[in-house]
Amino acid sequence: MRIAIIQLGYAEGADESVDARAQRVADLVRSAGAGHDLVLLPELWSAGGFASSEWEERSQDLSVLDQGELPPALVPVAEATREIGAVVHTGSVVERTAGPGEEGRHLWNTSVVLDPQGRPCATYRKIHRFGFGGGEPKLMEAGGEIVVTDLPAPADGLRVGLSTCYDLRFPELYRLQLDRGAQVFVIPSAWPMARVEHWRLLLRARAVEDQCFVVACNTAGTHAGVEMGGHSAVVDPGGTVLAEAGAGEETLSVEIEDDAVARTREGFPVLADRRL
Ligand SMILES: O=C(O)CCC(=O)C(=O)O
Image 1 (spheres, helix red, strand yellow):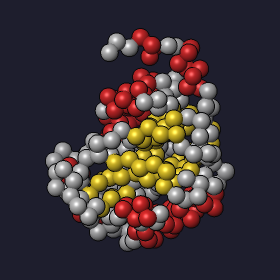
Image 2 (image 1 turned 90 degrees about the horizontal axis):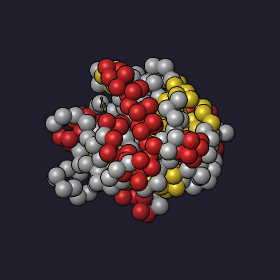
Image 3 (image 1 turned 120 degrees about the vertical axis):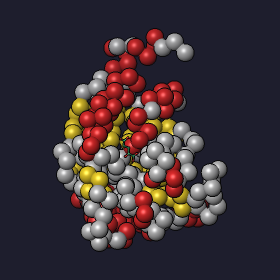
């Protein structure tokens, strides 16, 4: 499977509307995503990863998915998706619901994956909210559903577990995904530079402990005064980093071998020694 990771750079205050950013991202999907089976975008690129004061205004109504439509931030990306014929994981948007969730909020951090026709084929609501009482836990509901899915062709062949950014710190989520058959962990993120070494370590740790591919797309630039870490990466099931970005806007193009998961698990069958 050929994978493109689009490590988008942007800065709040640079006067880039949701529409303008969506057009720019769609152009990147066209130019950098063509010739790939799976394209990955980062977390909350349309709303701004750390720009929580703008989340409400930049939020998207995903109930339109049920009517076969897409919210404004994803329409240009879906057009690009159809043109290149890949599966596109659109990172995540701030989802707005009409009614409140369990904690009385109506915003969520939600990923949408598009099939090559530009139609949604999977969604995931971020389970672990980042902010220690501010940011996400203050403004958003927590997702409650583990998502492991078989993506459509041309990104088929490996089972994919969906998670987002801060989820990476919670290994039990990935064990639960493993138990549902995950072979690839796909992780859109907006992870700061201040803790980029945690990011690099945890990406490899999740790959090694669960013998899965890790495919992770971070942002670049400065969001609401927070410098983003970049260093998007693809790690193989043995923990080898197949590709890693630098700190700025950049695209990675990586080929992964479907049978590497089975080979790694057969060659070093540590998962068979789990004691539950
Ligand atoms: O865990 C971290 O250090 C960063 C997490 C984060 O930025 C996020 O989940 O948005």
